[in-house]
Amino acid sequence: MTLASSPLARGSLAVWIAVGVIGVAALAASRTTRRVLATVWAGIKAGTAMLWARVCGRRDAGPEILRHAFEDLGPTYVKLGQLVASSQGLFPEAYCAEFRRCLDRVRPFPYADVARTLRAELGRDPDEVFSWIDPEPLASASIAQVHAARLLDGQEVVIKVQRPKIGAIIEADLRVLHLAARGMNMLPHGELANPSGIVEDFEANIREELDFRLEAANMTEFNRIMAEHGQTQVVAPRAVSELTTPRVLVMERFFGHRVDDVEQLRASNTDGEEKLLLGMRAWFQCMILHGFFHGDVHAGNLMALSDGRIGFLDFGIVGRFARERREQVTDYLMAFASGDFRKLAEVMTAMGAVGEKVDLDALSEDLATAYEPILSSDLGAIKYADLIPAILRTSVCHGMRMPRDFVLVTKQMLYFDRYAKLLAPNLNVFRDPRIVSALAMDVMQARMQGT
Image (cartoon, rainbow, N blue to C red; front, side, top):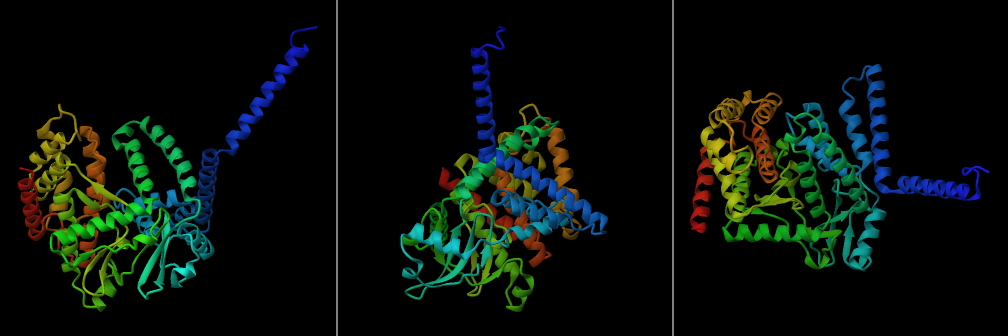
């Protein structure tokens, strides 16, 4: 009798087969594996749909097909879609425009799930808290959707309710994204794009967004800062603290128009340029004087209110700076606004964005070439599709790797620049003397406080 045919060997073989079957079953059952497979399948379906659309002569269908694929994959990919929407120049404009629908027009979830979450989080039937809830959402986004409602005392509010089972889905998606980032790091120059840092930043932001109590605290802090500076024209909604939980946020309702709704703003005789300058001043004061700022001022989160005030919404993402980093960022902004590219290069070195052995003269010249179009008075000539690749080329050439918190500030500046082009075509947010002088004043005050 051979060893292979012995009962002991057959028993061992059976054990190994059983272990293999259990391992494969466990792998297939894991949420991460299912999300990988779902992502691959969504990619295959989207690619097939794009090919069929081209065959049918619909060459412009690609952005819509991809957006639907992202929405099918769920909240994490919708958040990535929002990143595409705000990255004008990095992606084709058709895709940026289509993915702007991900900002507040994501596929809604049923009202039955809303009621179920309210009951579970508040520990009461919704009828015991609200006299009325609109079953149709005001807005539906990646993490949650918002419903208009009225409290029993008659106060008009909105209810922000988290999507069902979102936590487990996001955890699996984050593991997939970390794997993808490690793969990108292996590509030539891939590490310079800092994919791991981007995913880590994305993870930190999305985890904060999953606890609505943090958002309520951020809104309270913003309103406290505005009150400290006597700013009565810029506000965040006030949260109803006793009705705020990790998955439900009840807050006062704002009435007005999105800051990019040019037609409505003109119809209401709203001075768009004045409102934009007011909102920017408040944003800079928060960042420079307090190291705290709204980190996602896309158009759905900035409103011109019916009573003339400016409203900042959705404080799920905020940035916070320690004093040293705050000074570095303000030095960067001042050097940038004044066109002092040598100083800009020195600040970037101090921030750790480039190595200590970098050629500052060469870096200064390349920064001037890349950034000068933004500072040009010929605002209509700025094309982000040309500008951002030039900035990326400079980054690759000098091994630049921008800190994550700085990238967040830059993103908000590009948002403000986009609104300026819509509301005040003659306003250059990077060089306007009203903005630069107010910025310099705030910087001086911050430095005096630090002495």
